[in-house]
Image (cartoon, rainbow, N blue to C red; front, side):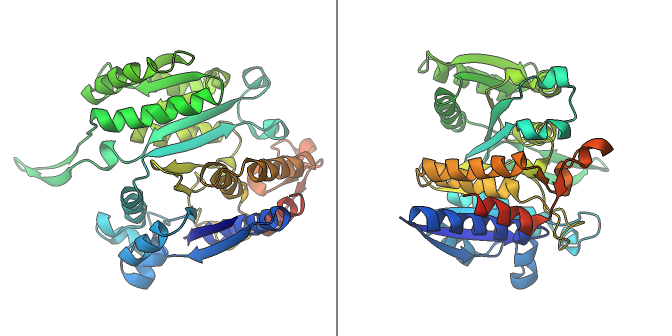
Length: 366
């Protein structure tokens, strides 16, 4: 099979981790007889520097012509980077929002599972971790506060900012269907997270999710308020299978979930539309403080590439090969700095390696 992939290296550690994902994908192509075609485009700060805007129309057209998009990270230090002195529509993250809208990427899948080999990196107690946990956070990606009307103006002599949270029933229904479909392939449980005791948008969310649930009698549905869910993620993460939620709640909860897995550097993600097309990226940021040091963890990006093979190309065996290779390297006690054990005596049992070496080892084990 020929795979036409657009890559967005982005900013900070983005180019470093994307390079390792390409390395692993090429190893997959060699083993399974595929042809990988990679085309790089600019987005974020790199695009601002080169083109004066975070994402050009030409870059969008190139992405649309591909089979899938693999991304690193965008943005920089919000306190010191000149990018954040620009108007909001010209800042790096505006490029990502524009791309999501242009490609109609409404469903964000963020798996969070704790590897047996990384239990020592998990901040939770052993009795909470148990045998580990495996959840999928399904986040709606093109609605809510991030895309609602907003303004900042003076009202009665006082500067006032307004952000509008808007959802219609069709937007909720399509993400709910995706969530229940994913649950059918997992442990058949959906936890729908909202703030229905306060927000009208959440009350509509809950109503539509309950309507969708009627078409999936095998799936158990529960509702949970977002503040309780945030607590339950650290109290008992094993209870969750699929967490279905709106845009801002999903953004926050998925970052929390990444931390209880040991490192955000382990958390992959997929953003899908109504077809097989998707954008795949690590859930972490651009980490400008370590960019160029060769110490970033590329595993989240590599696992995102595995999700790409699975969801956009239906190459399950190839995706499994990447995931097994990652697990094998961890079993062999290789670690990047972010997933090193905290206790000094345990540090002696593992080998700390850098970004490129981690990519090399995973590619060798495909």
